[in-house]
Structures are given as C-alpha cells and as structure tokens.
Length: 303
Image (cartoon, rainbow, N blue to C red; front, side, top):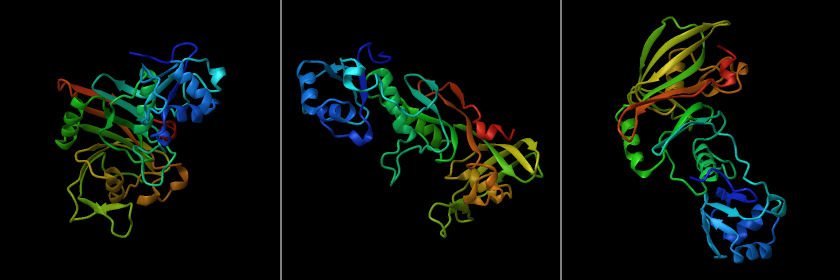
C-alpha cells in the first residue's frame, strides 16, 4: 500500500471540479506548469496516474484519480501533496471506514454546493492521496450538515450490501448526544411518534399521525445549569431529522435548533447534536463492532 508521495515527487488528486480534464490540462491547472511544459513531462515518462506510468497526453481523468509527477515541488510550484479539509478517521479496514464528520460539512454533495467538498468526497480524496489511487468508498448513511459525529462508508463492493441491510433490519445501534432546553420530567423515556414532512416548510419534518413509524429512546445523561440537559438518544428507527423532531415534540428542542423551535438558539452556534457512537455487525463476519466519535468542543462546553 502506498502511504504518500515519494521524496522529490508531487502528488496531485483530481478534485470534483477537475473531473473530465485531460492529464495535461490538470497539470496546467494544478501547478505552475504551462500546457507545453506539462506535455513534455508526460512525454518523458515523468507522470503516473493511479500508480501507473502514462504517456497519453489526452488521458481523461475522473475525480479522485491520483497523479504523481516525478519532479520536486519547488519546480512545479505546488506542494508535495494537496491540502484537503480535515476528516479524522475513527476506524478503517478493508471492509469499512468510519470518519468523524465535523458540523458544517455536508455528508454528500447537494444542489447549489458547487466547489464545496462534502464528507464523502473528502474521505475519497484523502484516502486516494494516502494510497496512490482512487479507492472504492460508498457512504452508508447521512448526517445533517449541522450534526457532527460518526459517518460510515463501505470500503469494497462486497461490504456495501451487508451494511445497507444492517440499517434496513435495524441491526445498527445508533447513539446521539444532544443538549436540550428545559428540564425533562423523566430520566428515561421512549418517544414513539410517527414522523412525516411538514407541508408548510420544504426542509422540515413534524410528528404526524399519518407519517412513518418512529421511535427514539431517550436517557437524561446530566442535568445542567440554566434549565438545560444533556441527553443520550438511541434511534430505534431511522427517519430524517428523527432526533430533532422527537425532542422538539417532547417539549425539549435541541439547543441551537432554530428549525425546530429552539428558544435559546443564541447560546449555540448550531444545533448541539452529535452522532456519538455506532455499533453494528461487521460486514465480513458479523461480529459486533462499536465505533465512537469524541464529543466536539462546542457541545463539551455544556457538559
């Protein structure tokens, strides 16, 4: 396994906005080289794509491809390896990869987000740079942009189906931490309320008797000062915005969640919701695997 560019080499990774460029076009776009100089390097056998030397000037590239140029960084006017957003890896093997998605980063690209890298793209790009070629990586579930924590990917085609099936069969134990407003009357409860789309708002959901069944087990982990509480939520089903909708309907919205009625949103830069842990059957042999993400600083400040 390649773990980075060799000394005296520049490693480039094809970003989504460079998808479809020819090899010489990428070199001109990503370095200080002119197209003519880039073609000379390719002709001289000094360029490799996904660890394979190539002299094909018009080679069309896909995003996530890795291009190594056997010349020093100062000559190319480019760093030895690309500067990509941080995305801490919590677990990785040949079957699955888990990362700690920061709040503010999309899980997957959305409409109108051109030029903004989503977590699944960053994960592919960072692994590509480490390994020297584009990896297979498929996101298994999504987190809201404002939610931090564990995000899982299948790392090979054989792993994807078992992981998707585990989600569909409710074989995955998903835990979230949230700072909520108010003082819950009970230390533990199960919120069993169906959820559907809110017809008055394109992005919002609501408790709706005609919606899909949804169940969330809630445990008060700590009662905080100033009428706040830290709760742990276990998803017994998986609906869009389930934790946020259920906690709001319970009368204890997530602190900072303006979409679902936070009355003290000025105290938090975002809805303080964190995907803290996932336990699931490993796609290779079914043994139970638990993956945890550290509590982010903005939520930890309230603990």
